[in-house]
Length: 300
Ligand SMILES: *Cc1c(COP(=O)(O)O)cnc(C)c1O
Image (cartoon, rainbow, N blue to C red; front, top):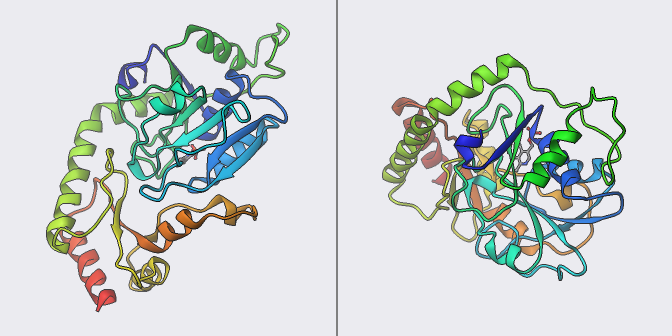
């Protein structure tokens, strides 16, 4: 994982959730500390913040991309931010880091070498729905020897030595040799996985006539931008009734899941606009044709 990500240190853990826990604790996030998260993300992100006693501050996403917006509360007030690169779309982190935020980058949906990333801590997930999976598991990577040492300490739950300052407990988050063997194979196959996913995205483009869509850096989702007046929720459920697993948006909205008051107009607009079609390296032409004819039927 260190080689793959281009970082000096990698820690494998039992899930993406545990990778976030580990990254938060290593960054010094403790009880009561506010941590910014966007509303468009996986509920695990919210739960991971809660699990270390910290307070998730759920914000709307940007108008031009369904990722965390650039206008955040001042870093003097809220210092810690988790930035999930949702759907394979990648947010440039350098401006946030230059402004003084401490950023944890969540690459669960944008697994890639991190040469484009300024993040100090990046997490990965290998859950069944991700680009590379080994059943479950996750990873945290960093170039910082201090963060690395803190994570090493955190993950040694068998150690009798007392906890060190700022790390009030340890995490037991093991990964098995079986999983590691699978990870080696997944990493070996990754270029092929990307190639096939790009191929199916281009094939969708041809069939659908170069539609308006999102252009992710990592081919995790194929998301169409529906015309105004269409609702992706109704569209996706009509496709599902016909046996094709389309998704409106492709993520939950944390403010809805956790009943958080506030205004989230951009997230809600994205949810109505974006329709996610099935994408997997294992698709074949016949299946793509089936998705396409289902799409046409529902469009008509
Ligand atoms: C899947 C996912 C996670 C959680 O990973 P698990 O391995 O399922 O715990 C965290 N963040 C994002 C953006 C995800 O998509």
